[in-house]
Length: 260
Picture 1: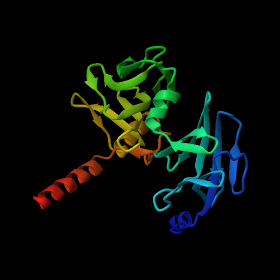
Picture 2: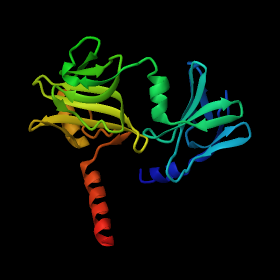
Picture 3: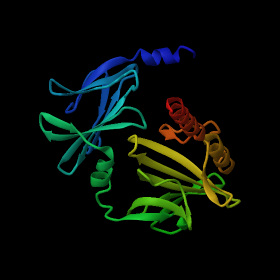
Picture 4: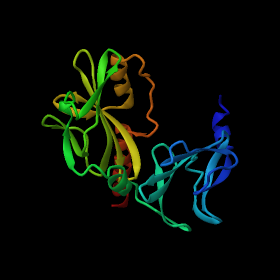
């Protein structure tokens, strides 16, 4: 078991051509012509993206080990998305057969993924039972309500209380977990344009405010509702950590103090 990290570092590098339909040491799933998925074989990673013989992008494999990529079509627009990690997408847009350019992922969400969602509105998550706004599903002994509204979410509140910080956040999912004791946990999934990474954050009502939870706290509350929820669950994307934020603040403060 201790050798697993070493094995991860031993992955062999692959070059992936953006127009590929097949290749060695990676699989191509073209079941959905609008989202062709490329998956590196076990023991391999995507190191280089190519357009014909031209190198489009070279991955810094000291930081990332990408194994999945997508060729995505939206009408006449063609994109290539390399998942540097679950949290960090890298996107290119086709200009000509030989020319692809990097494309901002936040802009891509607004202009292509959410093209039909014309309105940008605040979401009141307390309306989780409202048909057309949320869809309900069983969650152990409780329920989970998923936002399915036809608008882009500008910010999230619960009645008159703010949930999370909407600054630089593009919300991809909002969920409300409700236990039999009426306790609630709100989950926000979003793309943060500050560092261009996906986040997954949990909140619960504490002393009249919606508090960001450490993952261990969220796991405990969700496990109480549904024992299938692992107590050691860790998001594949970025999670919120008050300790990490505090550490960054302290380091910055010390740096300022040091240079005064």
